[in-house]
Length: 464
Image (cartoon, rainbow, N blue to C red; front, side, top):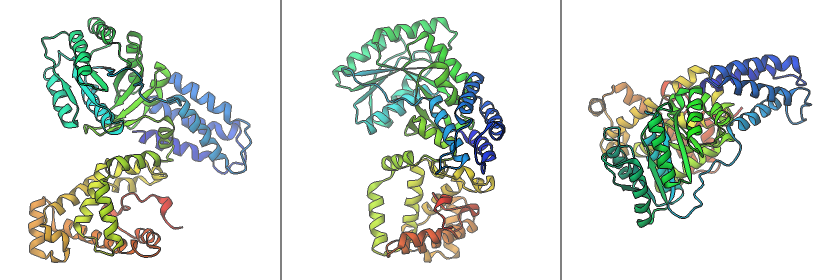
């Protein structure tokens, strides 16, 4: 998400670098390009106009602070206004009520609502340690109830049964009573997808809302619909007292217009961003962090939080001890590192949160391909345990067997072994005095798939 917008804004903001003072003449071109970048990102025109005028008003005539050059001062203003547009207030869920705290999920057909229910259930269970129950009041879409039941089992939360022959209001009210009896902290109520123009369906969800009086009413919207996402959210907000927005399918939206328009048009905060189909692919929305990502400043805090949640701490500690004791870094270790990276959303997701990665040339970004790292994992999985622990055993016949088993070429295996050797040399230095600094120096010359940088290596870590 935001790739196109980030690229265009970065190019626009470079125009004012090296100026001694911000004034009308030296920011007009930059503002014009910022305006075009926002419109191309499908941000609603009224939002763009208001944004540009506020930035202009703050920037004109402002004496640049001694510690900042003009481009930094201008970027700071743009960052502040991006945060203001997306909502600087606390967007966390309000669960302060007698349990169960009921959360009603609404949305258009095909927006990814049922998957989002499972994602939110998992987030509440794992991050907030809540006892979560879910129920489906979607009696129209075939197998909708079964889909939620399967997802509930996957994430380990309570599924409250319902059937297509029941009325949605009856399902919702019975679910609240069942959740109370089962001592659930939170009840998530999935509803049928509906169009804002469908009066009968909108009347039905109003009745469901009135019958259970949810503390949160979240509208799930497909981010790929751009500013239309904000318009449909507003239509729902006119019918229901929405408390927040969940932007789904953000991985398919390189523009980011929905995130920048929704808060202003609806007046409701964005609470979560969802991406992909995996049930752990939901993150709390922080406007300041998203603004930093858009401007290429990275989002290291989110990266750290993600690592704390998703990295296998037992494996990480075992690996650290192994390196400190000077033991060899074998292909089992290499496979573990690839898996840890995959658990965090892959290399592209990690790099998106690192400062300066947006300034990498397009050719370098194209080389950082998660698919190549997945193939490396498949190759290692096709080896025997002995081969993983003693890679020197891999002769020609073994390589041919592994290539056949992994659907790759012998050349791919040779490339993997070469990369492993380079990693092995660096890891050997970690346990020694000053080992980390030596490892960083070694990473400068390392060649990864396509000639790119190694995982998680931002330009700022290179020695000048």
